[in-house]
Length: 254
Ligand SMILES: Nc1ncnc2c1ncn2[C@@H]1O[C@H](COP(=O)(O)OP(=O)(O)OP(=O)(O)O)[C@@H](O)[C@H]1O
Ligand SMILES: [Mg+2]
Image 1 (cartoon, rainbow, N blue to C red):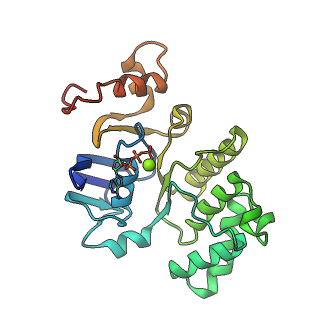
Image 2 (cartoon, helix red, strand yellow):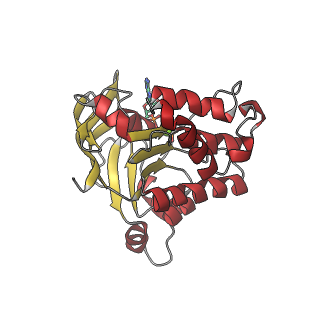
């Protein structure tokens, strides 16, 4: 089994004249919590959509969980979970019903469906709200439900696109604690994006900064902070890496 759970080479996605992801080379190790960081519009969601087989690349290659995202898309899908940036749970169904739909989509065998759903709900700390309509959930509970939803097929690798956006600090911490527990107890590799640098610093062993679709820095948060100077935070690293004139078209100096 390869060390790399995500491996891209020259991965590119264009939307007309705009290159949203530009010749991206990225390797993410199996078993880590990886953070994809960068400003609005940097190409993070576009990259995740290609890695989760939802969007075909315009060029280059990507392997996820050992399979090619274009030629072996179905095999990739069997091994991953994906929580998109926008809220996606159905408010008119209960938590249980939302997970039931997912377990059917993911072809979880009928004999284990109920057990898997209850496990995922308990794991994310929302078992008590199992039969409540999602429209009555708080934002934090909805986010945890969406993560639970993505767990019913026991993914090796979970993509979380801004899982804590719009949540209050307590709800954010609850989400992160559950994500960390998931990583520790189920050994799920986590590939996340966030704009909260202190959370990326606390959670991720490995982070990559992207800017205008290109990779600008990749490494352990501690190493990147040390490189940025004594006492630097990951916020400082973010600002330094993205404080580039918006009309600069070549990232060579970064
Ligand atoms: N379907 C699309 N059609 C046209 N342009 C798109 C499409 N999807 C994304 N883009 C553009 O690609 C660029 C990258 O967008 P993307 O959503 O990947 O950024 P992001 O890093 O996820 O940003 P954010 O932090 O705001 O979520 C943006 O300029 C965006 O407008
Ligand atoms: Mg995004």
